[in-house]
Amino acid sequence: MAEAAAFIAGFKWFASSPFLIDLLKKGYSYLGMDVAEKLRDLEKILIPQMEILIEAAEQSPHKDRLSGWLKSLEDAVYEAEDALDLHDYYLLKQKVKSNAGGMKVRLESLLPIKYLPNKFSIQLKNSLVKLEKTAAKAREFQPFFPGGSSNVRGSEAANKSGRRVIPISQLPDKVFGRDKQRDHIVDLLHETERLQPESEYYSVVAIVGLGGAGKTTLARYVYNYETEAEAKHFDITMWVQVSERLDVKKLTREMVESATGKGCDLTSHEQLQEKLKVSVRSKKFLLVLDDVWSEKEVAELQWEQLLAPLRVGNRGSKILMTTREKGVAKVLRSRNILDLKELEKNDFLSLFTYYAFGDVKIDDKLYEELEEIVRQNAPQLHSSPLAARMVGGRLRKRRDVDFWKRILSGDLLKDTRKSLLWSYQNLDAHLQRCFSYCSLFSKGQKFQRKKLIHLWVAEGFIKTVDESERIEDIGQDYFDELLSSSFFQPTEDDDLYTIHDLLHDLAGMVSKDRYLRVEGNLTKAVVPQEIRHLSLRIDTPSDLVEKISGIRSLKQLENLRKLQGLSVHINGLENVKEKGRPLWR
Image (cartoon, rainbow, N blue to C red; front, side, top):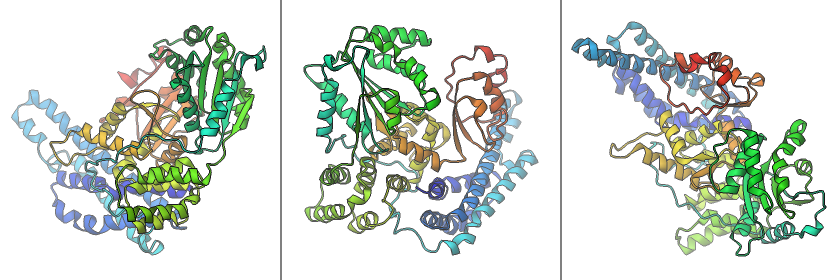
């Protein structure tokens, strides 16, 4: 997937959603200007041209020409938003003072900004003029990107208003073509103890394959088989998602919680290890380590620390791991490595058809036509189950013969990453914005539906059209739409969800330069001053104050006039309490 195409796709919500127009309407009304007159050309001509331009650029070899202008447009939008925030802050401040200042101050706080201090008026007016001029530059790029992109995106019916969406039903997960592999892995897991060397406390089975090949699906298929069997082979089963960063303490906690089925409030690594020992002592366990990555220079030591408590389990205990790299499987001394091959053609066709047609009734003749299109073109998806889910799910929303032919016979879907980008491009603008926000999460991080919706609300991503609608209900619909389209995936825990690694990579690409996630040691991190959304997961809390204070667009928290969303989970701040006082006083 070309990074430039993903970068451009990340800006589409500016043109496709009412955000830009709403921003200008609010600003002009504060300045006491004729809103209708100011926005007539922008709303009727320029905004539609911008959307067509951006969509055409996504598939053009000249897409790099557009990147600089889009970045300038984004900066101008945020500058105008900051000016409006400053105005709102001033009005709120005046209203607070009005409790002691009488009617005169209360009336002043309700007046347009032209009656407020001149500096606010000038700053807001300048920012709106800059935004208008920057948006108008879209016309300069039209010769490079003639025509629209309806042949590519085909989303004429997209919901651009940000209104409430009613998601299609989420299909139950279904596994195709993996029964033989499941049975083979189960046989390896049930391998008798006498075949296990005396020196081994447990043995490791590894599933190795490309991203999106279905490793997690197969591991879950095996895991469910074991947990649902009437005659249990294992006393305890545990499932832990590892992902990029090998956090020993975090993973130990998750093993404890998975083994006990309860939350764990212990904070000490030693206490967590002891708790895990108690949970598995003298018991035969199955531990699934899903999506294992590794940093070679620290891997063996960290794995030793993580798995040490498991030595007290019974012989015959097993670890089943999934990974993209055979080298990682060897670090864990895996005795059995299964290379996950592509699905057979018929199995892949069944998988794609399942997600493309779903459970909605369809005319027999139309079904036959669409099925033939799939049969002829589905092999282009290179047998990637993830691509089949994503593309099939998007096609399910629009059962149109010409549209299916155009998409499945084109060259957009020749690799998994392009398929995922296309699926993102076909999301409505407000859903694109909500999904890209999730790049702030760590890879493999589990998140709660309710908390994520609250963050979207705090960021202003969710808008109501009907005053009778609850904004949280609209957020639920947004979430369900992303879930039914496979952008979110349920986990084994109730009300916890996650994002596939490849989709997480996509979220990072489309949100580049706006969202930044920093993990580990901050001394190695480069944090651009222009970043507007920052997620910090740090090993050394003492670095926190120094790093944040240099970010121009975030500022120190003591200087923020408007804080839209703040989620803080910090351990080990005792030694920096005084140094960090300005951040939370």
